[in-house]
Length: 327
Ligand code: PBG
Image 1 (tube, rainbow, N blue to C red):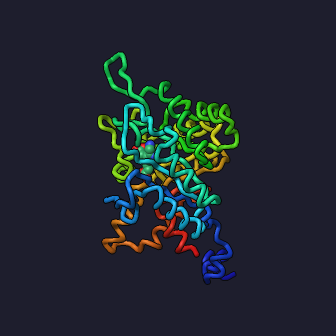
Image 2: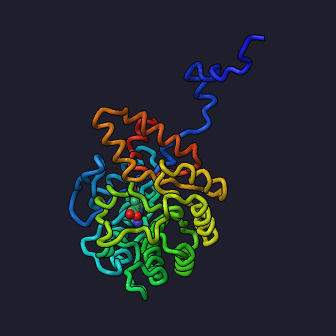
Image 3: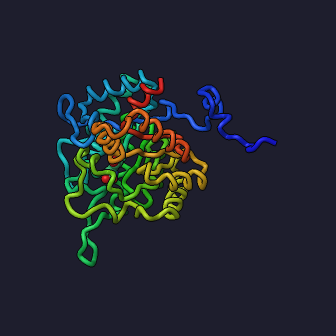
């Protein structure tokens, strides 16, 4: 018998064979593009994220139209309000920047999914994801239970403006349940919740905080976002959010947490989204600009790996480029 009997190279021999046995595919329809919407006219570049800009509502509509044309599934909206306060009241204001962007995009591009990121950090003057309180030990911290009604109110405002999905990214305990109850009570029983269920306290969010102007003025987010060392806890958080009514789970960031993504998918068998975050994007852009890597090949390989690890949906700043390359 000729040796070896099993020759895995047989099915790698031609593009047609490789194509036929490929296990994972990336489709533009699996991708969501984050958009940063500001209250100023026009576009403003973001230093650490080449190719990403802050957009006026009008420019966000133009970007949404381009996404629809390219077959990108939808957009995730982040608001940058002109004024901030201690509670983050612009997050739920009927005329707030995100509410205006949601309704404008839905009016112009009704078929595109509009996901509203649901958090207070872009709207609070202190930059934390909820309201602050002082503990008996004299420490300033985010007040979990006092933040829940504000998040719930924001979800209802976003659904009222026409959001297809609300996506809480604050990491307060019990927020999915509070948001589900508030949505149901307001008649939005069919608005899905995509929970940032395993959101790690990650250094990879650096460029985003410049983009969204949401860097905490004091302290950090380690008191509510997850410790990067914990995988079991990520599964627990995810199953808890599912029990509270989450429709889609999320793991964030993506590349350094592919093991978590796999575990969450296996444990939940629910639709899972992965967020390929700002720092992951910035590294690829910087290396590509320096000529160290082939951007197109690296982006498509990255998205394939994230899908292979269990993601049904990928939020990525590369969405438009990838959609173009996949055509
Ligand atoms: C808001 C939020 C953040 C990101 C998404 N939603 C920042 C943070 O928690 O500090 C990060 C996204 C990115 O880095 O691309 N809570």
